[in-house]
Length: 269
Image (cartoon, rainbow, N blue to C red; front, top):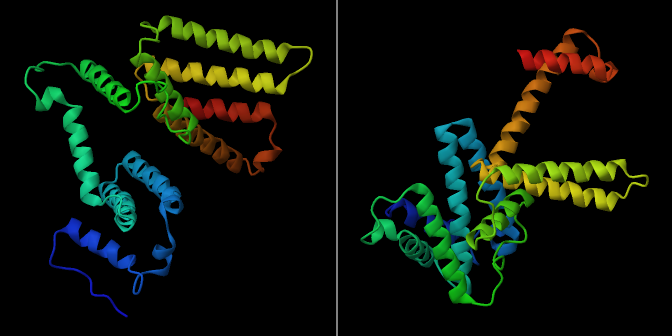
């Protein structure tokens, strides 16, 4: 049975109607009908990364397209919630609207003029801390840190939570000292008479955590910094590949010394 496409409503209402049609038990799409909350999570994560990639490329049309795909994920969850009798799209929108007003008293309440961006950030964290306490006063400061966050982002979130309760350095210099200390501990494991692989992995994990802390204190987003470093490495190695191609030899046939020479030339150019 063919379903007519809604045309006489707002773009958002049209999208919601399309989603409802896709999930119609009798005339909907077999793939969409098969999905549940858990099954579409990987697609949501993928779409978020595609938005980030489009923004990094600076392509307005691609950004628009990818944001549409990401919005569709929210619409999909809203439809699943409505079917379960839990919530709908309006509930999601109302909830986030209320949260934004509550967490921005400097905008929506009197007496908060002239706040700096840093002060606003501290206020935001304090309000979130109060919200967590209202839900469960005995809960750990890490209670709602998602366990399945990418490790780099999770480290940032853990460190921010510590800062919100005063457990943090006020200066970047001891943070840098801590990084050096962790490097020394990695070196000590490598120099040990008997290599303990589990201990080495633990020390490298501590080093990574301390580097994330350094980035946070330097007001550098570690995810963005690492992504930029990845792209810089790829760009330079592509130059190495071109030099090997110009020499008409397979890349694997060059010695490490020769490849290092190519690498230095790539850096200079």
